[in-house]
Image 1 (tube, rainbow, N blue to C red):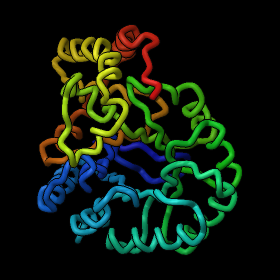
Image 2 (tube, helix red, strand yellow):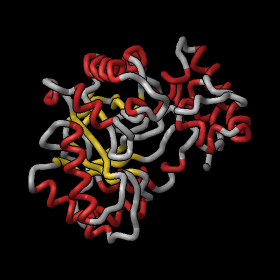
Image 3 (cartoon, rainbow, N blue to C red):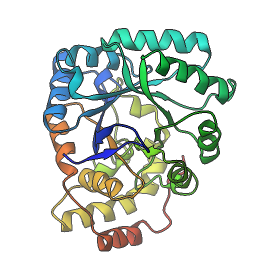
Image 4 (cartoon, rainbow, N blue to C red):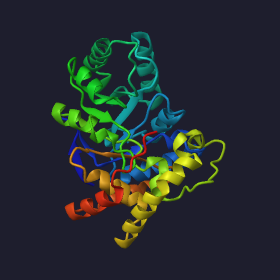
Amino acid sequence: MQTRKLGKDGPEVSVICLGAWPLGGGMGLISDKQAIETIHASIDAGANFIDTAEGYRTSESILGKALQGRRNDVILATKLSGDHSLEHMNSAIENSLRALDTDYIDLYQLHRPRPETPIEDTITNLEKLRDAGKIRYIGVSNFSGKQHREAAQHGVIHSSQPRYNMLHRQPEIDVLPACLDLGIGIIPHSSLAKGILTGNYRPGYMFPDDDERGEKREFQDDVLNFAMPVVEKLLEWAGDHGKEGAQLAIAWLLAQPTVTSCIVGAKTPEQAVYNAAASEWIISEDDLDEISTILGDFLLTI
C-alpha cells in the first residue's frame, strides 16, 4: 500500500488508517476474536496505521491484545479524550500505555479542543511526554483553523483529524489551508460520513441499541432526507465506474492534495480488506471535476 509522510518530518504512514472506534463497540458489540482478526487483516492488507482513543470503550485493550508480537508492524495513534489538565493527561497516558500493552505511543492526539486549559500549557505537557519517550509525535483533532495556528505557536503539530468527507467539506474553508501553511498532515475522520456515503442507511433505518450512531443527529430522518438526493447521485456515479459508494468516499479523500491518510473504521476482516483495496482507485482530475459538479454547494452542517 502507498505511504505518505505525516507532516513535515513525521513517520511514513499507510494511506489507509484503521479507525478503531468500531472495534471497541461504538458501532455495536463484537467479540474480541472478531476485533483481533479485523486488526490483523488490516495490517496484512498493508494498513500499518491504526487510530484509537481514550474514549473508545475497550478499543485500546483490544488493540493491546491484537498487537502482541506485532507492535513494530504499526504506527499506533491514540487520543486524549478527557480534559487537558496535567493530572488527567498523566493518568490518561499511563492508562493508554497499559491498555495498549506498549511503552510508547507513536502519535498522541488531543481528541478535541479544551479551551479551559491554555493551549500553551497543554502543548508544553505533551512535549514533556515526548521528551520522556512515552510519545513520539503530537496531533490534534476537531480543531478550527485558528486553533491550529495557536497550537503551532507552542510546539510542532504533526497531524490533524478534522471531520472531512464529501458531505462535510467545511474544513476546506479554514482548517485545510491552516494545516497546509503549518506543514500539518491531514488524517480525516468520518471518511464515510459514519456510513451515510455507503448508501446503506436510508430514512427510517433503526440502529440496534448498542450502536452509538442511533443517537447521532446525522441519522435523523430529516437530515437523511436532505442528504440522500446527492448521495444517490454519488452512488450512481461510482456504479458507472464499476465501484461502490464507500470506495468512492475513500478514493475522493485520498485525491485531495492535503490528505495524508484516510481513517476508516471496520468491524470485520472483510471490511478491513475492502477499505485497504479502495486506496488503489486513483481518481483523475476530470473525475474530481465531475464529482464537484454533483456535490455543488451541498453541505451537511451538523
